[in-house]
Length: 330
Image 1 (cartoon, one colour):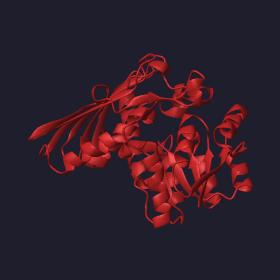
Image 2 (cartoon, helix red, strand yellow):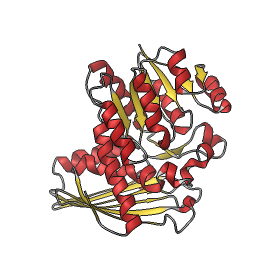
Image 3 (cartoon, rainbow, N blue to C red):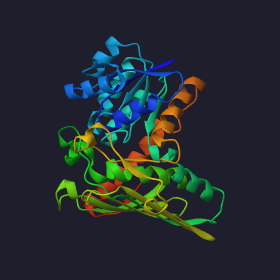
C-alpha cells in the first residue's frame, strides 16, 4: 500500500485526491491546507486526516508520497521540505516560478533516492498522445509547422487571487501555455529560438493573452497561443500539425472529448477549469498512475525534473521575449 499526502486542496488538489481513490493499493491518508474551510471540505469529501501545512503532514503521518498542489511560487519551498522528509514527490506544473528556483530544485533532485515526478498532464491526454503517435509514425511525413490554442474559459481564481499576480504565477504563459510548450517539446525536441507577444502590462491580468513562435532545432516552427481574455465559457484546445504528406487537426469543440469540470472551488464560483475526457480514463488519473508505477517499478516517471526544467526554460524565454520585444536564442 502506498500512502499519500496531498499538500494544497484547491482545484488540482481536489482532482488529484479523487484520482487516488481509483488507484489500486493506494490510500490518501492526509491533506494539508492553510484554509480551515478547505480542510473541512477534504474531511467531508474523503474522510482523511487534515493538517495546516507540510510540516504538520510530515510530523503527523507516515506517508510514502507527497503530492504538491500549492501555488507555483511555493513549489520550491514545499518540495525541499518533502525531500528533507525523504518522501517520493509528485509536483504540479510548472516546476518553479523562475529559473533560479528550478535549478535549485534540479540540484536537490540529483542523487535523491526517491522518485520525483512533475504534472505536465497533456502528455497523458488521449487526443494528444494519439496525435504524437501519428506524427512519430510518419503519417503526415516530415512535420513542418504546428499551431496550438488553449483557453476559452474565464480567468482562474485561486488562493488570494494569486493567478492575477504576475510575480507569483508568471501569467498566462507560465501557467497555461506551458502545457503546449511541454507537449511540443515532447513531440519535436529542443527549442532553438523563441519570440513572443503578450498583453501583460497593457490590460488587467484577468485579460492576458499571449502568442509565442517557437523554432525547434529540427526545423519545425510552432505558433502557440493561449488566452485568459474570455469571460465565462467553455474551455477548449486546438492542435494543427502540417507535414510534407498531410495535416493533423484537432479541435476539442468539434470532437467533444473535453468538457468543463469543476470541484469545490468552482462550486463556490471560482476555481480553475479542468479538462476531463468522459470517454476515457482521466489524464490526471493516468499521470498519477504513472507516478505510482515509477515508485513500484523503480523507474523514472514519464516527466522528470530535468524534463520540466527544460520546459520551464522555454516558457521563461517567452516571457523575456515579450518583455524585451526580441528573439531569444536558447
